[in-house]
Length: 220
Length: 297
Image (cartoon, rainbow over all chains, first blue to last red; front, side):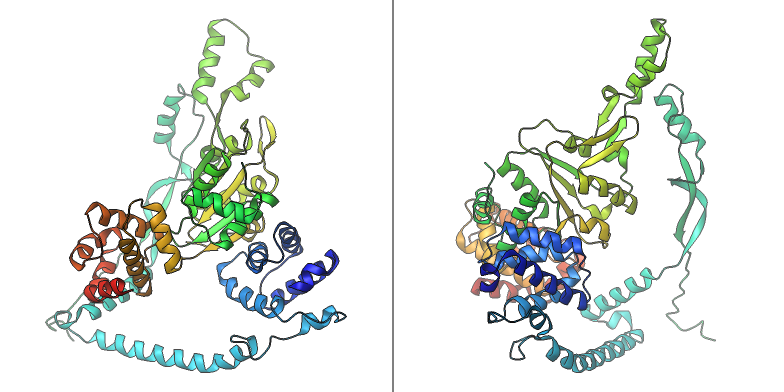
């Protein structure tokens, strides 16, 4: 940080551009407009205050909640290293990787990914098996926790509900002329149809009939 | 008096009983210095809308609020022609046997017959202090409306075909909020500073409750905040925000509570949790234990 505060404005600009490149490589879209904003932002805050610098960069460079974690890691790695000795070239700074001793450096994270993935998979299997069990259970014998899981599963089913075009028309932004509504609105303006109203076929859920055979009498 | 540093702004917000953390204060300060709109995202009830109110109180600028909803359009947000008055005017002319000419037509689509809606109000203002324009829950509006906002947010000007382009002489301070029910367009985001407001830490939440609920016993504030923090760790359909903590503490205070009691907590759970399933979930997780934990905290 001290290098930023002490260096001429040009150095800050170059450092910022490098930082933007790192973010881009990490998959965050950082255009020149954003960098310009970030530079203006840095001008308006206290450069000695870590929090202000962090948020000035964050609010100008990032526009998605999902990118915040990437930004945090990049910020830690790039701006919070020990002050670099004078004379070190900018490209060195840009290409330097985070210190492996740090708690959440990027390379270590990549290594950990595989193990994490496997764990996740196992968890998924366990969940699937549990759901499978639910299929064969009587509602009457389910615990509250199981009932809640069933409800969640049913919600997922409901979300898959297919839609179809209804034969009925509903008010819409475009479609066929809605004479009745147009005339009614025209009454407000003394019979002159200033605004026309439209109707269109609306989307409704496709009808789904679910037969629940409790006694088993319908089994083939 | 408009605060000129981050620290001054933090203090000024605190005077309005709005406790902003360093990040939010910095970003708000930047938005004022750079003259850029501020886009706030975060869970419901973390104080996005409240910030606009607090800012309006600090700067003395009028708060102009545009609540977005599905299907909102220019006629609701920017301007509309007052058809009734236009017709009345024509009738008057007809009664006076005047001949309608070019002039009349020009007059008919003049400012006199313009019905100003929030956005036009914010752009064309005669206020001493720039107004605070709050565009609330932009994620509810349609894509087209978002696109329409682009001109307004980057150049602070709007175009009315019959009148021309109206440019803001005093730029309003703009705050947009989104509950992130959908991702906003990049073009809109590029014109804004972005800030994510998360749930506050326990210490901050206690502070917020004490600032917002005057006369609350310290112990009650601490326990209520601790309890709600614990709730957020459960797998709920809708995690309670700070707004819920404040409402709930007010309810507990109105019931004369000095600290949390399992019975009263159970009876008032409805002001913290807004879904029946969540209430059940919490009861199953062991309300008594949760209350015990909060009291011990």
